[in-house]
Length: 410
Image (cartoon, rainbow, N blue to C red; front, side, top):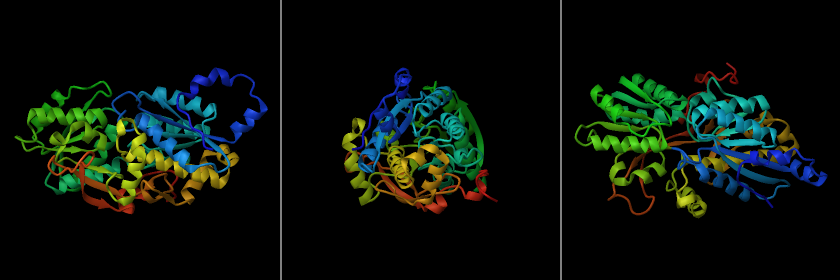
């Protein structure tokens, strides 16, 4: 029987210093521990948070008993790299075999270094920075579901093709925002467009975006690119609407990273017409509908899964398949070898269908460009988006040779 639990492993640190009975030591040697680290209380809570932990638990339970047990724990990194690093060190030192999720790119990049130092497995789902499979790629790390390059190519490219050839960015001032602004700006300029300017705001200490919106308005850019996510995206869009820039001023909003939970928080009246990119949507096809309806009753506030929570499910399942294939002792001995086995195995699950894990750690799956429906177009709860465009897996992400990943042989 697969067992799961939640909570901070660090709370058991004192007990871990006591002598361990032989029977318990043997049980621990045959237990795989997964630590889900994400924002449980801040602006990204509704993107994954507790639901990200639950989705990993569901995957562990559905994986079943393959000769070893699985424990899933969760913790809040508070969007702080120092907290994430300390927690990662504690977890790995105290027996966690794989760390999962880790949104907030500054935290995700910091944990990437710890996993490499400890030779442990690390699967990032929630962080967006494409540097995880670029200059800072690691043999211990996989990057699931999306990144800034994919978002920039899909959403940014679509906006430019629709006539949005001048941009102003409102950017969260940390690694994620910088990478998303950089990658989108590159696509805008490559298509013949112009970046009129940008403003970077303190993260996560900002809720009033009015001064930044006024700067965007003064630039006379046709598109305001929101290089942020979660509650910051919701607040930015609401405040832009209050200024009347979209309806009276003809300005378009590029919500470069947006999730179905954000649309739910905005409401269709405010969100209608926005374009966004995800690699998962619950109503995409029969497979995704069946999967989403099966897991939804277990999620907090009965949210539908998004690409991050579905990614936690997918990543957990693929990792456990690799552990079963190579054996628990070998998987505990080397995170690099676990990642190598994951790369050698095809990815297939109910959330995303089929995918592959590339040499640089990038998971390749299709990306989907959606438009938020109007209230009149929606047929019921969570029927929020209509599909505009599909980018095949082999085209959705940055080409392997262009990422400057040291793992990639020239």
